[in-house]
Length: 516
Length: 62
Ligand SMILES: Cc1cc2nc3c(=O)[nH]c(=O)nc-3n(C[C@H](O)[C@H](O)[C@H](O)COP(=O)(O)OP(=O)(O)OC[C@H]3O[C@@H](n4cnc5c(N)ncnc54)[C@H](O)[C@@H]3O)c2cc1C
Image 1 (cartoon, chains in turn red, blue):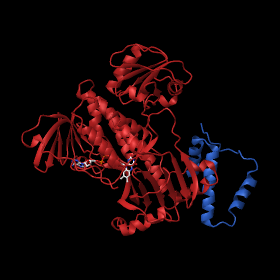
Image 2: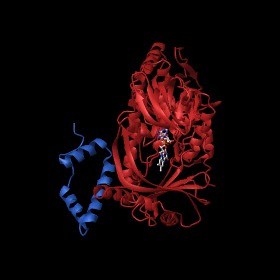
Image 3: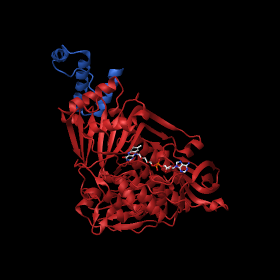
Image 4: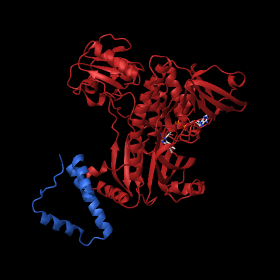
């Protein structure tokens, strides 16, 4: 059954009749990132207005692959369980060269995490769940058919002019968050531009509905005989929808390639029959580019407005949700006067760093899949040739390195004998507790996690003591018998020590709020 | 300190050189390129040391 695009209701905004008081935060764009941003701010007690020029969720399934970290973030926003329940949890990927399988991988979900490594779920479902949660949240004022047409800022505030079906009005705010997507009108209005690489390659992306007992696996082909010389991908989504990506070559005509009479025969060759319904088709050119800076005084860029990547590796939406995770607590603290504006500069440094890692990985995958003639193609082809005869080369085959959160460069105190996976800068690893999960217990507040010892009381942090299970030991202690972790509101480890010292912990909490 | 050995290190290198040429004998230019590319990849994996490889690339490009 095709997805039912129900329009969201438009109501004439108050600002059309009388000026509205200044808002704390105005978010431009109710895509997945804008709405997640509003929910995250609401979790931190900050109300916001969200403006979107449209009144339906993303038409066509763009993002399908949501990473474990995204699911953990969505869980904090109240839509994680729903997304996992609806989504297809997959873990096996198979890679073919010509028509033989060269290798397969198993994401081998490590036990002891609430969320799976990945689920496949159409972007329109994720958006639907987020919008539902936002509409039910009193802190969020979601306004559809509100199109931002101009942006201004001065030292004290940002101002936007907004077009609605009933006319134009203005809003002022302390901070404007641009979540208006890859083509970001806000970015253009501010005269800012992306730096980076555009790939001279076109991909046909199609979703089809078919009943087949294909396993929930990711299948990727290099140069299959059904699509000579190019690459192809087949991936399962809920509702019997399958995603198909076909590399087309640069000199194809995108308009022509989108026509059903061109698309259907291509897909018949992939799936081997014609018993399917075409749900959605588009032709894309991919880029790996970003804004130089994500913070421009009172205007903050989050999600695709700040950075775009090719979808191989699923780092677009997943990267955007990590922006949200990083910015929410910082902006809330600045707005409430608990932190200085300097803290926002760390959103810029940390997320440009994360974005560079995503761009690097996506660029490498795209280059492997679409090598330029000459040495690039030579080595790509020879890696594939080697993969069928030497195990080492299988891991060199790159059809997308799946999204994992970056480890931020951190200079907080560390006890290097503790496990590497939970070092400062890394997201705290989940673990089961008697009555739930560690990440759930951490929530979104500053926490002193005491393991195997009593933590001293310090101002500005909650103490969490959990029993030392095998999983907790493996992820947080290693050989040590005790440790104390200071964990930021975005669940990133700020510092850790082998033994508790109230002064040291207090110093680090202060440093954290100063954005040092 | 260089990690890469750029002083004599391979016994019987004349014989290896001969073996290398023999492996390419009768190949087209494209096949030769393919063989060389595979060799680079196999040896890189065997060396297993990123620093050595970076220095080797730099030496070759100099
Ligand atoms: C084919 C494809 C496959 C992908 N696969 C994946 C994947 O598997 N995993 C993944 O994580 N990511 C994937 N992505 C990337 C993902 O779709 C994007 O990263 C994600 O949509 C970004 O969300 P966003 O909210 O920043 O922007 P968008 O989703 O683009 O939302 C922007 C919103 O702003 C609104 N807007 C624009 N201008 C204005 C204005 N002037 N005033 C008011 N509102 C405005 C728009 O209507 C829209 O609702 C894929 C993308 C593509 C194209």
